[in-house]
Amino acid sequence: MALKLADRWFEWRTIDDGIVAIGEPHIRPFYRCNIWLVRGRGRDALIDSGLGAVSLRAAVADLLERPVLAVATHTHFDHIGAHHEFAERAVHPAEADILARPTLGNTYLGKYADHDMLTALPAPAFDLRRHAIASAPPTRLIDEGDVVDLGDRAFEVIHLPGHSPGSIGLWEKTTGVLFSGDAIYDGPLVDGSDEAEVRDYVRTMERLRTLPVRVVHGGHFPSFGRERLIELADAYLAEKGIVPARRHVVAPSPSC
Image (cartoon, rainbow, N blue to C red):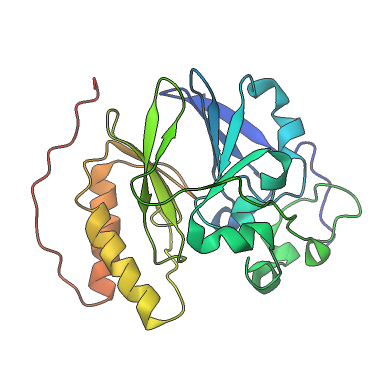
């Protein structure tokens, strides 16, 4: 059956803490990247950028009031498609070369590019099998302990390998907000393809379950709180035959 043409490709809504959630509703949920725009006093952060089938920058131009740093939580095709539209781009060193030189293989686009991903087309002649991710050489490399400073709020970079070698999260300690990319989200988690990557993911899950988060904004599916984070992490660890040690961590006050 031929797919219809989408009336509009992006939708967005403002949530708490100066965060705008941007989505591509005509991509099926498993492949639909959550794009997050975080407003700061001095600059904004765009966390991931979607498929790149339609210009993200043009679509959300009215939301972009300050300079924007486009952060890649990792470099799979559904997260970096529009990074080339932004002058400032940040990624973990382990995946810098992919952002600069994306291919069908290293972004996994070749593995998953199929119109079954879509419920509508962004343009009449659009063919996902011929879609390519544009080169977006990073202007900044970010690693464990680095800070993304927006002027009035700051996010610590935490390295969360397993889903991919350079997966990162952005953690705002004062509010308990975590942008987790695909390291953890409320859906079927995907780990790496070899034993070393699975070991990395186990360590990432053990770390995440001790983090005193208030809310997790993942790379896919709806956001969730700390209790659900622990459930998701424990389920993954149990799948790998690991019983996590119980640790008492006091979550931050919502008034922080």
